[in-house]
Amino acid sequence: MPASQKLRTVSRILPAINTSDGAGVRLRRSIGSGEDTRLDPFLMLDEFSSDNPGDYIAGFPSHPHRGFETVTYILDGHMRHEDHLGNQGDLQSGGVQWMTAGRGIIHSEMPQQEEGRMRGFQLWINLPSNEKMKPAGYRDIAPDEIPVHEKEQGVRIKIIAGEISFNDQLLRGPIYGLTTEPLYLDISLDPNKSIRLPLVEKLNAMAYVFEGQAKIAESDLSTHSAAFFSEGDTVEITAGVKGARFLLLAGLPLNEPIVQYGPFVMNTVTEIKQAIHDYQTGQLTAV
Ligand code: MN
Image 1 (cartoon, rainbow, N blue to C red):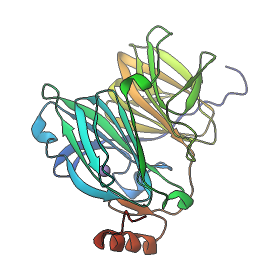
Image 2: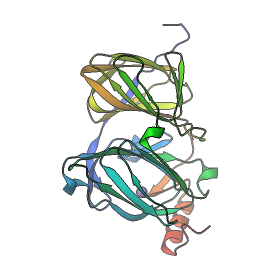
Image 3: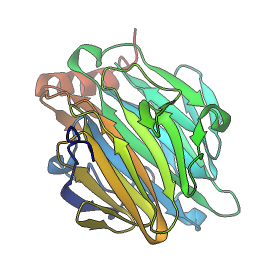
Image 4: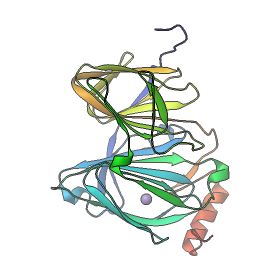
């Protein structure tokens, strides 16, 4: 290892807890299960995974957001959505919706089965104070717009957001250039396979294992658990005997105060009161 490299270790392991949200969608929540389990700029990470439509079919009927972004990544099944702007879509398996709530969006998100099965993630990423009231917008990213790197035997990397150098090749996802510099990778490793990735030191970073097991430094990470990384510029991850599949997430911390009330995430109590008032008076999404 070059002397300049500083390996990240695991500073915290956070097993996902079973909970439900929306109209009764069962999910696993790791970061965001409490105020002390965020990783700036990430506010929440939910994993949906079920073979039973009763666990998710009620979905997330019309609801508001203000002050942050939601990133929905579907692995199996699909999700219908529509919003107050008249946008409608059907997010396909392997696709991503990157939604910037900004000053306000009111939308519905309704998971749909594929042979009974539905699996995916929703990540909430905070916005800096000077972008919380920008106009709402979103991007639907089709599966074939997301690059997949599989040149190394036993390694498969999907690059959803940001860029990373791997084996001297620069991999870049369809989403980049945001203030929080999010890196969002879906990585699969064959059994016992190890990879080393550079992770810019200024970024907070974590992994969330959703298949198999992984080892980072001396820490073992089981299925459905998140690991926050310590400071450093490189991470080494080794798959367990059955392989591993995990999200690797990194982002620039905002270091700003957070006041959250359900789907509103602002910097002050006054701004939260304003958001509630705006929603109740039909002005949440007014331009
Ligand atoms: Mn939503």
